[in-house]
Image (cartoon, rainbow, N blue to C red; front, top):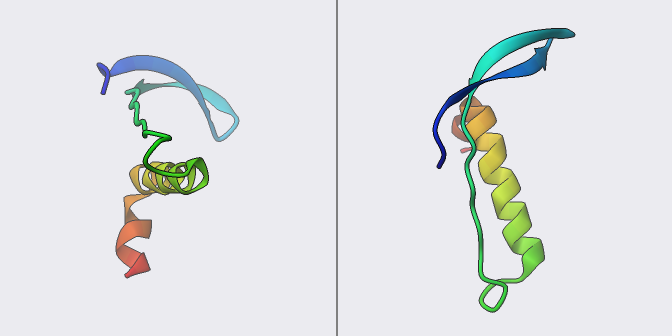
Length: 58
């Protein structure tokens, strides 16, 4: 996890300033296949971007 920084992003076709934080996740290719790992990381990304989706899934 990195520090939160103000960054310009596009929202509703407008450039606005939003607090953004970088998050790095990794996996060991010797232990897990890349396809499953990428799918897991994409699911985590989706949950972070839309937490309600995680709650509605169960």
